[in-house]
Image (tube, rainbow, N blue to C red; front, side, top):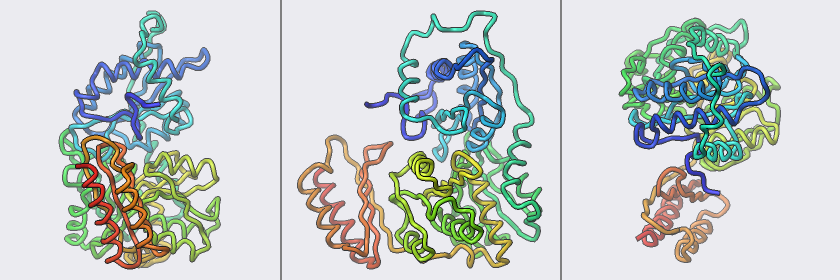
Length: 447
């Protein structure tokens, strides 16, 4: 069943285009009604990133929630994982994060969390979609039952303490010079505070949001800014978050970028040594490098692969008892601590290993040599190019070409009319040939 509003990660689109005040109000009303359980006073926590449109969407949602009798607790700018954590911690019936993650400021979105802090499943989202388009007038609260709204000033401190407590009690980051890039986003207050309180010397960039500069040539999607600063300051490590701080990338002391695959390898090795892995392996997506899979196999660990998207990684983790998973892009999910990706907490786990091993980040984080991996995108207008015989034949030929020493992944984008063609293997020339052959076939089919 095709969904009208929800995509792979909540509702997202151009602010005042797709995400209008009217839609935000109706989402508030519909979600509030969907999560009414029992006769207690229901409440929702709302966090946001630093986009200008956050004000518009926040107050529209407050109107929607209070109109159906739900009390609202406003957190202000707050990372997505903090909203998920505070939903549980404050015994709220619902959590809302207003953010378009790593997108530019013109976009915004609405992410929803249930009382357990997990993102909503497809069935609940369909229920909410039906309510959004329904006539809710007869179900609005009576005058005495309208909700109230208030700001929660202690939210920052609560999340900082939570993040710090994911580390061993006696561990200090004293002696580490860290460049921290907050992408002018949701973590611009809490992340520097947490690292400083743990003893690190913190040099910040991307901590001056103005409503327009979130993710603009900064943050985990633009690591070149962090690379330059790490070299300039001769720092021990650089940490880059994205706009809502649910993903992280790291830069070592030489300015080399460490992606999510290497971070998962470091944490997996550390947790294996400490007996902290709840299952003998981790969960990643089809896009994670084959080098990671081989490295884990050498440790006696498996790599379970899912479709692209942190929700699919988390779903597999929950269903099969894993407590570590993530994506190459830097979504690292540590289910011992949280219910979604948390860039700051993942970075702290890495820093704990660096301190314990007393080695440079470049040595700690270079667990494996990534195999040559090539990704190309083919844009199309209409139709289903992947179902044409010429394309299917090209895909089969490319798989034969790569053989047992490589992988081929072809997938349509979930957000735009693009087909992504990715291959990897030991022989870079073969990988390039495989990708180019498939791209050529898809391009001709799309034309």
